[in-house]
Amino acid sequence: MVLPGNCSTSAALCMQFLTQLASVAIDQAYPVQPTHNPHEKLFVSYRSVPPPPTHSSAAVPIRFNSYSSVGSNIRGLNSATLHPGSIEPPLTPGNYRLYSMRFCPYAQRVLIYLAKKNIPVEVVNVNPDRSPNWYLAKSPIGRVPALEINGRVVWESNVIVEYLDELFPTNTVLPKDAYEKAHQKILVERLSPIMNALFEFYSSSNNQQAQRQNDMNVHSALRNAENLLRDSFYGGRQPGYADYLTWPFLERLQLLTMSQNSQFRYFPGLHYPKIGAYIARMQNQPEIKFSSRPLTHHKAYLDSFAMGMPNYDFGIYGKN
Image (cartoon, rainbow, N blue to C red; front, side):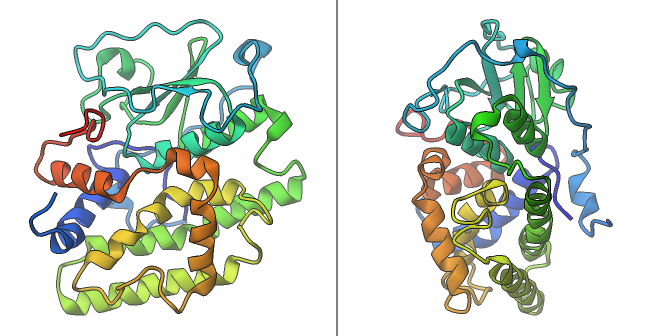
């Protein structure tokens, strides 16, 4: 089952998954340097929301250059995080704003989409655990990502990206053919065992027997992903909806190799040549390069979160 599409540091995926990842894997690699869901209890801060109402023409920006370089229309990607007591930045009518958190994989889904479609947007980073009151009025639980235009707010990453395709159909990512569109959504569902297996891997007790079972689950998920890859990308000859919604989690998978209790010394390893080549192809896509962060930044953020002082702004000011 596909995991919900947003981040909340209080209880959900991009917090609990990454915190456990930090404690199990990263410290060992860097000792000095910086539809039943079996994991339902881990997702208590997530919920699904219905698709947004049909948009009006007022929801589309007046004009923009869709042929500009990838990411050049996105402002504020590394803006400082806003916390309780901050003042809401003014938003010009007709402009889009993405509320994000710099290390949230669900927010990265939307950033990839925005970069691919070259949609002008201002990114405002907010603290998803202790959000400003003005943001709680827009996203009642303070979750990210959320997209705002003319006072209308949409959240849930999968809902947002489909909304963007409806607003900007000229360069839609989802296929226009109904069957192909459905197939891309099915692929996202069928690729979800990767995420589920990783959750099990880092949620289990830290003993060798449990790790052996978890390794088997990861291998099973990778075999599934290998078999589902029938072309250069899950979207065909070019990356598509399934690729963009899955990638933020693949970006973080290299952290698996840092656990001494896991048999994964390289990811995905020699048994999965198609996935290995796929990861290399994805890393060469301009929209992926734009949205990705260095592994050292992910590590530093995870370390700070594990200590109870999440540094949402790591990497902005040079030395942190």
